[in-house]
Length: 209
Image (tube, one colour):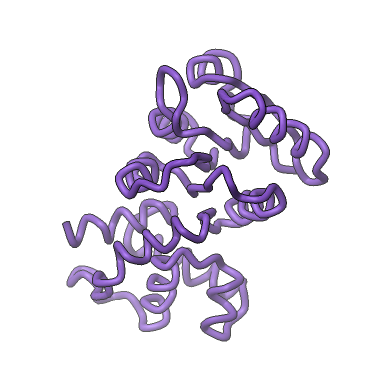
């Protein structure tokens, strides 16, 4: 059961999300807030698994919320929910610790699927956002010199992650099982001393700035 929190200041969007996820098997709607301040003061607790957060909130932004949540409760996943496709906003939120970036025009079933993906160590990104991430990394395929201990298979997995591919798709693309994908990802995290896909992306982003 995924304990979900929603932070959304647009009443219609908030009501639609609330009604949908309140009725979805596998989800428990833990809290709904209209601002970062309301959520951080009254709703943030370690029992939450996942936060779907509007990026353009009044007061503190969604990016600030992600930064605060990840530092207080690193296990909580945060997915940004927004109308913005701006590259800077995307990478600001990812650097803050967000596990995904979904556009508000995304159909509800796809939002649900993306959130479940995040809970399975995947990344939630709308297709147009994923393209921007791919574009950013397309010329960043070489591995840093300090990463010589990575195996060829681990390098292949990293390249898949850079493209925003989830574990199931990585397995299909590389003709290996999902369990094997997860094993390689664990080994990659150990070798590079990172704890999540976001930190992995930040690791390689820093290598080419």
